Image (tube, rainbow, N blue to C red; front, top):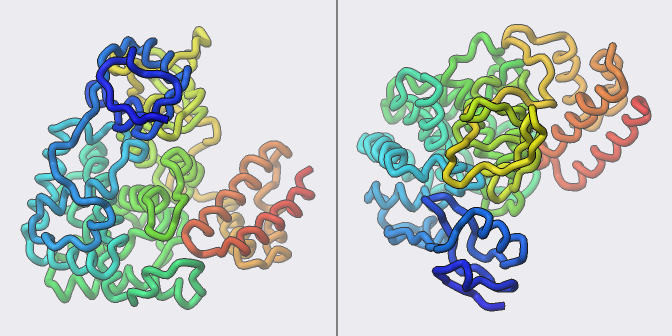
Length: 440
């Protein structure tokens, strides 16, 4: 098969391999390496694309593997673009950074934040000790700052700096433990959790203001009280911490780790966040979806032309161009490339039923927390004592969706986060089959 770097659509033929990403008005149409088939040819023709121009970045950016050994850490502009190259893909970010104004704003925010030597020195130390932790923090900074601006957070710069340093307590965690490939023991996991408290010590050591303390200490707290280090509930968590929890989880699930080949897709991560409205502030999950324009299958959305549509299909490589079905006419269509019609608002997702206020954590959610804790720890018999309490009044179909599917997602998440080995995940899924006997 030939690799082609071409100019005109009529030069394409079936079996060719596209040599470079192909863009239209800064929108990615075809990724590098795509094999040309009849469907692609029809799509390009239907979009009215006659001239195909590849988009070449004028900046010289080092290959990803060299980012870990950059000798120019004090060149903040180059560091920004190196980091951007590592974490940003349109499958995770949608099209939000295709705007020159948006990119310039976030670049200025990054550079101005690192002009504080205390911030830059801490981040450089983290990058040297554990590159993934640095890139994860940079990723959270990008998404967090953009989302904070759209969500009405008052002091965006302070919040953005907090996103850069919120994991700084990992400087006091053993490097081998941070980079361990595989399941953590209970003792190791408890040590990792201490990074939230170690971070407070680092803030004092480098004399940073107390306004960053809550983000550093509480970003793993959850609305239902199941987080750490203090297990506080929703009413005790600021808007900034709630937003950071959403972005931190999205980044952790979707960002490629050096030793993890299969991170969650953006769609799967969004679905997971949506299904855990008892843990994450749902308004920030929705704001994140609307920021990156990535919506899970089945979402009901409002279009810029005033119509409502259902997301019918989503391509994980180009999730920002879903296939939609008009609610009124049942017409199935794609969004136009020029975005003359776009999604402007998320309305609902079929898997969300009765989103509760933060303070209204039902008894069933409390029983669910007991249930999942015992189940994950392998105490299936003990876990099943809570099963009647969490399924009371449910129809079989609802039990399957709201309990069994949710349980499977919890198990998979624990494995992704390193709390379960592949073998333990397998055993847990076998136990899920046994629980199905109580449903069918």
